Length: 279
Ligand SMILES: Nc1nc2c(ncn2[C@@H]2O[C@H](COP(=O)(O)OP(=O)(O)OP(=O)(O)O)[C@@H](O)[C@H]2O)c(=O)[nH]1
Image 1: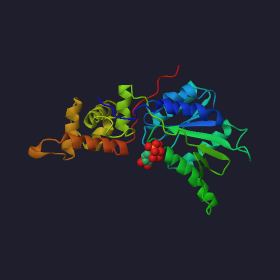
Image 2: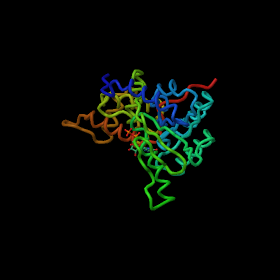
Image 3: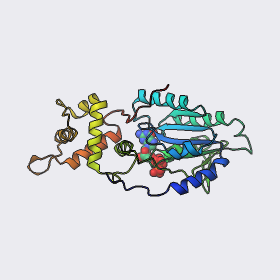
């Protein structure tokens, strides 16, 4: 397996987090609801100190609702200073829960002259920008004729008593765990070029066969379900007409079909990992 991704940003992100942490009231980490552990950043747990912390399980519209519920429960039970919310960052109603939660976690702030300072962080592609835009867009809807967001360096004034910091903003996941890296790639959280595309598709086919057999069978009208993941991928390719010369399955195209379908939610709502049992 070759991962060509984010070499050596650890040191500068760590420095930035250490610098920014004392200046903020609430830390928000956006993770992917389909893989809340693998899409998290281990630095935050270590560097957050006693700051109120919100885990935003985003893209919940793509994740298995039962599993997401279990994750929310797990996070809140395993850490008392932490609150977890599952949202779709494009949905205003969902997103409006976050400012409310921030206010409840830092009630002493958010008053005139004492803005509530919130830092939004997360690995690439989890939906940080979408979340920030929806937070800001709410303000556009209310005010209409003035720009909703003001950027001063890395601060965004939402003009509702909340100041967003998006530094260091982008973090990276732990790619040392091979299974986690495969989940990240299969969900689309790390780019297509980061890992061998066909290996990722084989991993996804195998995972779906084991965990979401019915969704897989329905999507590709599979009558027989080959146990061997490469054969399963070939069968999906055949069903989708991904054939090369001589009627041989073009496995690259088959991989593309499966991963695109999976990442866009066309196969159904799929979670890639479940929380550990709570003691
Ligand atoms: N289905 C779904 N898609 C989402 C959601 N939030 C974001 N997306 C999509 O996910 C992709 C990445 O979203 P961004 O907001 O750019 O993510 P980001 O974390 O800012 O990404 P970087 O700029 O790479 O750090 C986009 O295609 C979004 O439309 C969500 O809740 N549900």
